Image 1 (cartoon, one colour):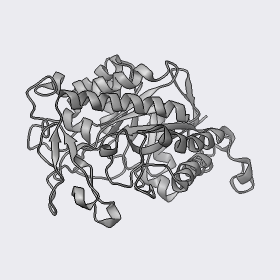
Image 2 (cartoon, one colour):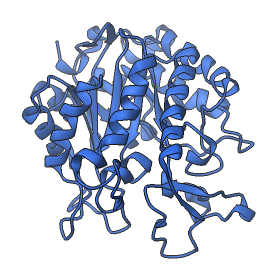
Image 3 (cartoon, helix red, strand yellow):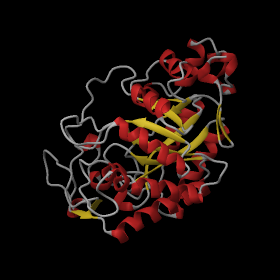
Length: 367
């Protein structure tokens, strides 16, 4: 058996193979109401038809001001959960595990969509006041940042409650994995990084204070998520800012153990996003795999690790798992180019007997 098509057991949940569809924002809620549409159903459903073991939704806002753009997906009401339920039903019917990324954009919220310029929106332009660890706004090169609120204790507790309530709704919608988004310069990452967190209270200062919010959010999600179902946390393993005090891979190794203590089962390892100058040295094949590998090797806990970044071929994905560098191969942009990436991998790796492809497609794929 190829390792890519071996199942992954996390708690009592079985992911049938080691390919995960990375959460990828679609900016496609038609009426700016955060409700899932036919676009989301086809986008996520087609990747399940394509054989991915786990299909993760895009960053799904836990409250309205947590959206990146007005068109972002949300889960802050029962209506949002109801709109997502047909998607989880379809994904599960294809043999994939439906997962959701719970997110809050922090000071990177209230922007137009990428194909509309990704520019900051003021309240009179359809934007809103954004929330952050401090009142320092995102440093836009062009355009004035929307008003930024420094979260006080009540605001922080409100964020924790929003993640908890969103997890409850996600469970009602039929998701089997909940992922806490603490990467890419969004709210929880903003608390983690000294680049954006200069607070001097219990949620700032050193490592313990700056990691408090993500630990409390993860614990809140775990509190309402069933014991038999896993919780993931996506982190930026490094800020990619070696010229200043910033979040590092050493910090991420240390954080992974702390997250395991509060009930996280897998660390989804990405990087960057905290500042416009945050850039990797290179962005070639597997360019972030070394971060996932370090976390997997150096943590004291047995928490699982997923690797993302430049995984574009079946051979790469197989090697990630077969060489014990990560437990999941998380594939993003290649899934946009090829929704059937996992079926393609089965053919190229001569493993069509190791996966149940959709019977409607068997004449073409040889299952």
